[in-house]
Amino acid sequence: MFDPQHVAALVAAGHAVASSEILTKQQAALVIGCDSMTIHGLLARGLIKKSATGQERQIDAASVEKFRQDYVALARCASSWKTSSARLKRLCKQTRIRLIQVPYGDSGNAGFIRQSAIDTLRSAMEDEDTQKRCRHRNQASQNQAISSLHRYIQNLAQNNEPLPRRFGRPNKRAIALACGVTRDFFYTNSDAMRILEKFALQEQELLAAQGYIVKPPLARLGEYLERLRKSGTPLPRRAGRVNKLAVARNCGINRSVLHDDAKAARMLATYEKHEKIR
Figure 1: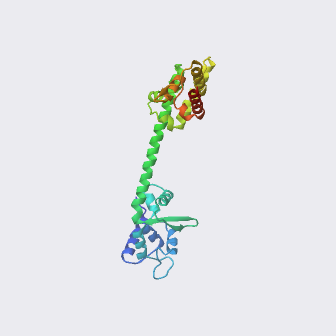
Figure 2: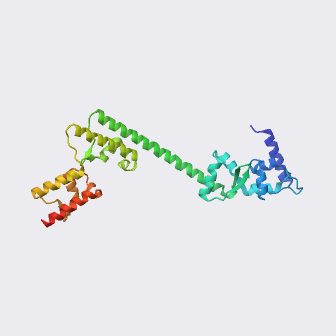
Figure 3: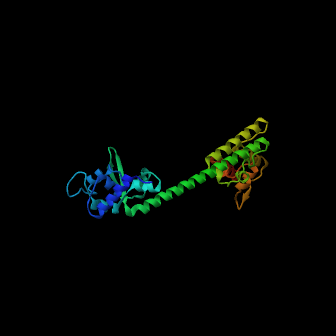
């Protein structure tokens, strides 16, 4: 199950630390949990020391043990947590965990953090995983709702049934109920809005081709106001103010048109002004 050479080196490193002896680069790397090529960078930055003998390949065991107690290699964390060092480096930046970058080989860097920051980094990774799972679940739910909308529209087309409408516009509440989704779905999901608007337009074009005149909301409002003017009937009012809900119902349009459409609002306001003058 284990590499015999690594086990032997780790045992030798343990004995060396215990007896305050010297370590080879390979032994020091095993104690720290990094690649042996990183040892040169740790020496260059003074994070570990050479042995008192001054020989190039001999590392002071006590300095290695002190570094191991203070720091942990991101590569070791990544291996234990089944993730990548690159991801952990990104999370360190996001959570402002101090990251020590040590030259590794010709162009890379090995990352180390303090032992005290391990729990913070682990929590950040778990929070990100939780958010990712929630996004996946939400996306799956959105996809299921879109499929339900497609089936609903296909059934209407196959059975030659009209789209539920209210004041000439798609009745999103009734459609959402039929699809088994909330009404907000048609306001927050751009794909759902596009699908519904496309089908509603196709249905209107089909009705127009069959001889039915489907007039836009502004035209309906204009015709309604003209009928009031000719008949001398006043605008419906409530508590002294124009009853926009009643106006919308009489025009066969949605009340929101009178609030959201600037042209419709001006048309109604102009008529009301002239009505007062008359």
